[in-house]
Length: 81
Image (cartoon, rainbow, N blue to C red; front, side, top):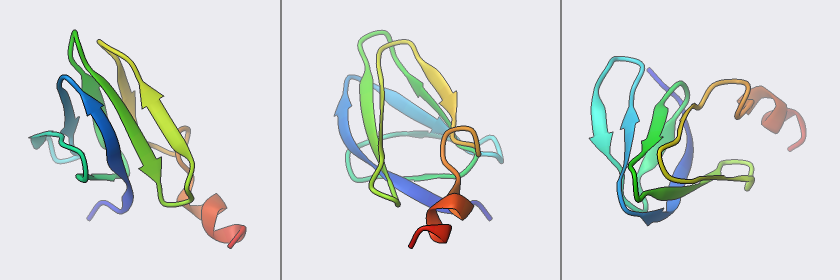
């Protein structure tokens, strides 16, 4: 099961999350995001995600990123708590 690593704090236009299992969700403010999710924004979309360690990631229109260890390292976060 994927680990929750953050929440959507701002959304303009459309954005989706594709889980490691291939399921696709239309994101809304307050939705949780999970490790290994593929986050995609639409042609007029922008999103801000706040991670569990209080860091923030912003994405503009027509963007994609996978929330893997290159974006968010949960182990590193717990080492500093």
